[in-house]
Amino acid sequence: MNPRVLLPRLVQTVRPSPLGPVLLAAGPQGLSGIWFVGQQHFPDPADWTHDDAHPVLHEAHAQLTAYFEGDLQTFDLPLQFVEGTPFQQAVWRALQNIPFGHTTTYGDIAQRIGNPQAVRAVGAAIGRNPWSVVVPCHRVVGANGSLTGYAGGLDRKEHLLALEARMNSPIR
Image: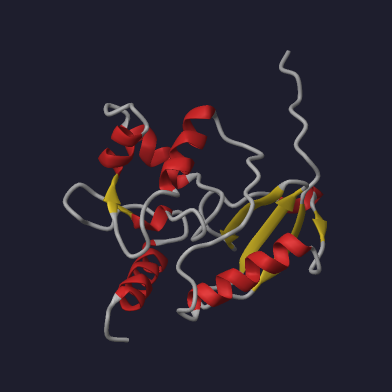
């Protein structure tokens, strides 16, 4: 018999973004997730409390808005891991080190976490990243530079990379 894992009580809200509505969730220690509504691996928030005024959710939405408006390059939000294996969490932490406006490959992430043979597992972990945009999984591309995989859809990934390229350009 598997003991039931008790997750911390989460609060959530849905907010607009230029790429469609996003579900934001927070626990007692910080932001627990940001997902585009309807994306792959979308959580079931049925047991989560709705709270539009929660300070972490409010700040997350404010920072997302500033990012989409071209006024923010680095997110400063406390993240609370409520799921994920140690391997997945290592991948998600490695994603946080990809500089704004740059891309890297799945193989590079596998190298960074000390497991160069785990390229496919890295891809699967990236696909389950619970912090869309904030933990920049959209900055990971195929070994040949192709846009491969994004739980929020390749059209969103392409938009995010183009936004960062414009923001990183000396001429805006």
